[in-house]
Image (tube, rainbow, N blue to C red):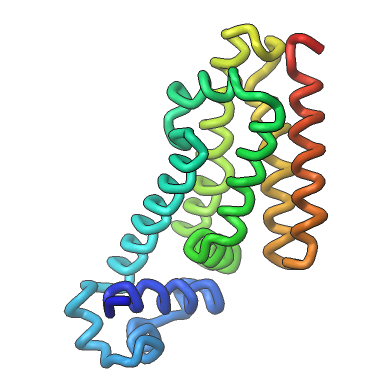
Length: 205
């Protein structure tokens, strides 16, 4: 692992334990085992490190969604996939993404950092809402809109469908953040949730 990568990893670990604003560049350098001036050869500032962590997270997410044969960002591209997959495949995709966000080192630590920092930093509070509420609901609302138009799902409010689908999954993710031993229980609930969601909104039912 390069020094540059070590800096990101140690910074994110510290951010997830203390919060972003409570960590200083000197703390990160000490965790890596270098002096602060040496750290500045790789990153200009703590904000520069933060941006690099965001880029790494996005790259990891894109790799995960590609492995599930979906885009993950473009609802127009993904709607046709969700409209044609079987219920079993939909369950597998839902569980795959849940486990990614729970176990991916960057994703889980970043979420914990924002959970801590949301009450102390206005910018990070807005980022928390964007990352885990606004963007997922917007993406899923677009998908359910397109699927409903195609005649696969019932023609009801897609924004409420998105809330019905996403909220229980995100709630279970936060439960597992606090109590990792409940993951097996959460996975079972997610499967039952997705199957029931499909039953409620599938036009054939």
